[in-house]
Length: 265
Ligand SMILES: NC(=O)CC(=O)C(=O)O
Image: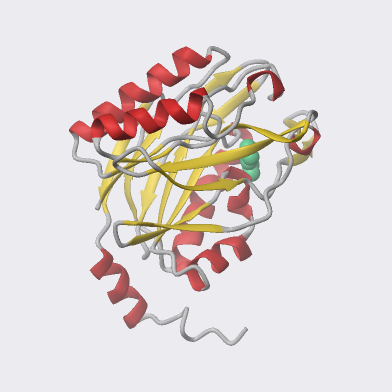
């Protein structure tokens, strides 16, 4: 299976964001991708906290990516979007997975919310406008079991272990809008750690560049193999990268270095 990670600079114009995402999906499919991963908040990353753009999973954003998946005959993991939430004050931060016919195969709501205060650097309280999900999700993509996570989830290894051990995941995906300040020191280290400790492929698609009102995202979307090696990476700015997932290599690594089987707790 060939996976593509798409890196975007989504802003406050939803139509333009969707058009940019579609153009990258088209290029990734032309490069042979079977599965395309988009970044967190692919629909909107702007000054409004979320409610003005929130809609149900079968709303405009969901239908848009379902149509693109069907038109190109490709699996699409539509990063995340602002799903209308449990009350008028909160959305969910939700990933939708569409199969090659455009049918919704799975959805996942971000569990860990980014409530962080780093003086002078990062001030973010995601829980003020977003409700947490409560359910890990693994979806079968033509024999590849894919564990779904979003951005800040990356810092919680117990979620990834659950996806890999109970969920049997081969591939862990991370749509993200990782901050520049944290990303330059933590992003690649965390992605490679999750890959090594769970002996899984990891595909991570990030937002890149500046977003209103005051957010700069790190980008550096990449695919990591179960040994922790970076297979491919997107340079700064919008773009995409592809990598082939060799499940035989994954099984070989798990057999030769059986750290998952050697666990004692
Ligand atoms: N933006 C996030 O959700 C997470 C992030 O930037 C970080 O963990 O750092």
